[in-house]
Image (cartoon, rainbow, N blue to C red; front, side, top):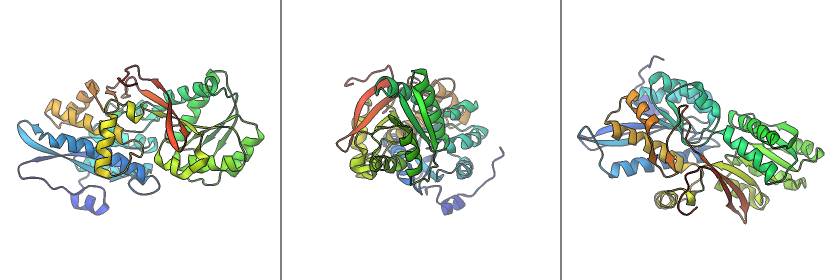
Length: 386
């Protein structure tokens, strides 16, 4: 793809690139952050931005050098609005502003089309939370992810539903997004591989607020478990409506449920909801407790969802620059593929496809208005207090 020059003033006017200020003599190295910073998912985008910024703060506090000269790492946040077309536009803007790499995008539907833009420019893209396997199956060496993908999540969750929750008549609701649909499909495979049965598969979209129709159909099928392929902002009203309709079957999810937002929106109706989330729980991450304290001290709020993974994505880009003493994209991509470093979330190392090696997954359940850890799956590298 041929890059067209877009002046920094235009990007600033669009609100996609943060203004720069630095000490005289410092070379500024831009790292892109692509996430939804406005709209319904803005809270998650801001959480990712905060996590990435902490990585840059830590790097800058060490007064980094590039070939003996001082450098300053600056974050260039860009709003993709969780929209695939906007994501492609944003990706090109970041390329034109000469970022050395990108933390993003949040959802798979944006990461997949944006990945081609970064690939054509040779720029590394480390997704902190895009779990759809198709993102790294495009064959782009520039596309990597910092957590496990949905094929694994779905397999683990399907097995858990049948073997641990003892469900035999399972209904599935799919939000038709790349994330939700892909996850639901992998979950169904996991269920069937373990001897369970799918009695119904219903569809909504990612703006649905009234789940009465699909839940009435599910109730008629006498399902003993409901799986939802979607995220917290819809899972909460879904859980409430299930209780109102006196559906006793538990609600199960896999990725995107475990947040403060779910707890706030679901209230007492969230009790007992179970979800698998990629990664270890915060207090079992090697650097989780320290990161949590640092995050709260700076932002005066708890982590929403994926901030530690954004931190590790940004820190990995910075580590590649410092290792190679270069901002050449080809050198950075090669360095990232060879990297093996201790991160906040665990060991950061990638397989040939760009997926995180040895990812962990955690089963959570809402108990007493909190997400309680039930089990940790995968991730053979254990931490001391696990």
